[in-house]
Length: 247
Image (cartoon, rainbow, N blue to C red; front, side):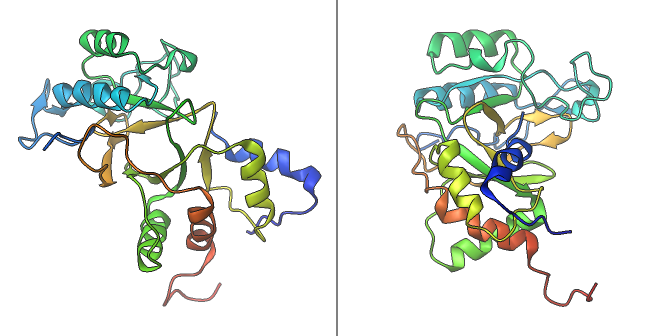
């Protein structure tokens, strides 16, 4: 079903549904040894702590997510037995506590070495993101590369891909969406007040990895403007696949 954008007064309600409640090594790279801890669960704890520190050096505000449940799959350490984002959301500390202070980040991961790394999106110098289901995400990235669009880092969870972009305002995003004929509900935007799990975290759904890694170094990676990716992301979600049968 297509969601047709109508008058501007519908825009805010639409947005509310779309916004989510090393040379020198790049932060988030998986260790070469594929180390595991406890009960055979992939945790990459040293790499996760190192990645969190690296993100903080870039000025990205981060915090530890609630831990995943047993075995790192199918559960969450939060009180919600039916948690929809196991091991992949803020709990304690809450999202406003996110920081790039090196001492605080070091203390957090010294005490919670297996905690997934959460990026507070659109905060300070930190990126925002556009995310979509994994299959459509792969199509969007491939199309953007064919068009010669310079992309920044791209994150993959077991179910979704997220393209990191420069921070944007709600008003700016609203104008972009209003210009589209339709915007699928599966397209999500992680701006100010949102968050995103970064590699090499392991959540209750599995491992988070880079599709496109940040360039090595101490400087924060280059990011495209959100305008460069929104149209292609919408097309990737709405264009029928070649060879697919007609509905």
